[in-house]
Length: 387
View 1: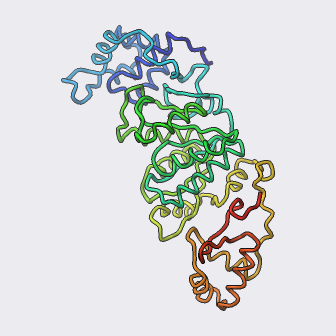
View 2: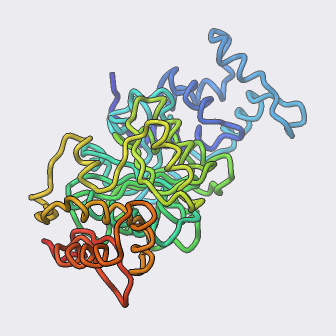
View 3: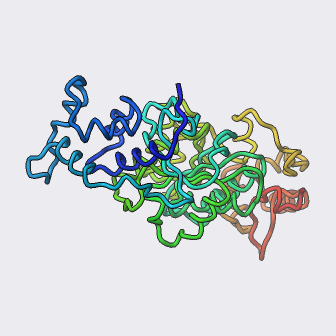
């Protein structure tokens, strides 16, 4: 049963979320016992003798607490804290078990007990894909994240990410640039009034205005390192698919992948050059069974959607066959000169220089390649002029 929230419960939830040493798990345990206002009263009055689980938790003395238990610390905090609403008008607080809590998180095994947010929570009722990856992204990786974000938005899919540097920010910029019906959804690791990284101030504002920006951290919370892995579980919980664009062998995006797999959420990865550290994690995921995403249509197909014609991205190019198909396979993310292609074609395919040059001409004319100042690279649908 869900309960309609009111200001009294929202204020009580804020007071609980601001208690010292209150972890996500502790807050979830508390709010599973009743309304926030009831929990506040019971903590203030020391009324937990009948609940051995909570009583044991409250007896624990945190470090740097001079031997005082959680019960003592929390009682003192609640006695001295204000009962006034601490939130500005544009910030909502959503409490697990209440009616305005996001439905897609209700059944999550580690759903945040309290969620602070800006924006339109109704966007979470649409289809949702997370785009995650390394902060130290390559230019190619940022471009791919922006492309996937833009095209998913055009297809009406909400794009979830963490607003970090690199892949996250690029994906959300793609959504905002596209102006499609799919909206940006961001989960951050600090309070909504503590922008991190600082240079993303405008991006945070735009996500909150056009989509949904949320965190389990109360206002004023700084982005401590331990909060980012916790944030990643919420990204996974909000998503139907987790798409990894670039990831190193270790990093936050692989934590999001692990959280997704624990929830039975599909993981997809964009393949990258084997020589690039930024793609080592994504290539490993593909090796270990993640679905490959080369184009947005790959993601839409897994969602059970087919928006190729509706979004203007249907690709009518004649498929490359024979020698042309073999030459096209030589291209990855990096542009190649004629000599580069000819050398690869000779060494791996036993194709002559002349045959390679003629094939490149056909592929360029058909829109599969573009040539800039003597350098050939794969053309995306828009690059080739196809609409």
